[in-house]
Length: 255
Ligand SMILES: NC(=O)c1ccc[n+]([C@@H]2O[C@H](COP(=O)([O-])OP(=O)(O)OC[C@H]3O[C@@H](n4cnc5c(N)ncnc54)[C@H](OP(=O)(O)O)[C@@H]3O)[C@@H](O)[C@H]2O)c1
Image (tube, rainbow, N blue to C red):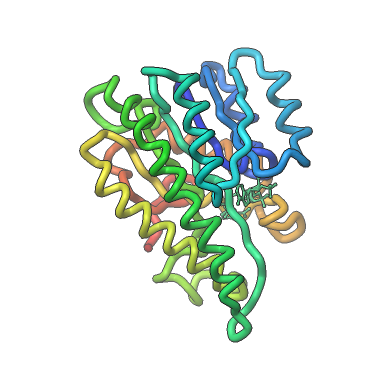
């Protein structure tokens, strides 16, 4: 996959961190990776990757996806760095889960998921849109991740059709499931609205991955395997995948 600039939210651990690692190790890696983090407490691994990157400039940016002010500052940093080249790929990865089961749901729990998993990616996408448009305008023809794209790290847990059928363990985190279904809708809408600008939008599930969120014992995939598969899939996507919901291998999934 050849892409000049990438922004990854929630890049200090888990899936986001592995994306930074693998993208910076590509044969032709991005020139810039904007790796955002929420708190400076856990930057050791990210700093290590930054220091060992040979051809990529990894720029760390503090950005809580629920803070408009921090998203605005991040946008300014990206704009100042990429200039007229724009931003090619935004990976809306930051996400969170807190288990509270029906009928004990609280407004606090529902809002927690909505703010981070749904509202966050929407606000980040809106703010970064001019940078993505700039990158898209430099190339004509079809859609691709090399041109301009938004990858949304969703979950198969967000499928309305399969809720309670395919996999039932996640019924214990309704707040999370609802927020990912809403994310899918948000990005379906955004996808329709940016289609003419040549910006590819996809919603992808990484699989059940051994991270803090996925859990180390029951999850099926090592982060290395999941992210390698997603990077491979990303390189194959074109307009036929626009605004689609898929697994890490690119197989379509029902909304
Ligand atoms: N792991 C799985 O099996 C799995 C399956 C399906 C989908 N996903 C999705 O994949 C994405 C990454 O998951 P993961 O497994 O890597 O989770 P993780 O290990 O828990 O990491 C979550 C990342 O999101 C960041 N984050 C949380 N709230 C944030 C906020 N308000 N602002 C900015 N960053 C915030 C965290 O930052 P802090 O370190 O500051 O908390 C951390 O960097 C999520 O969107 C998740 O829903 C994961």
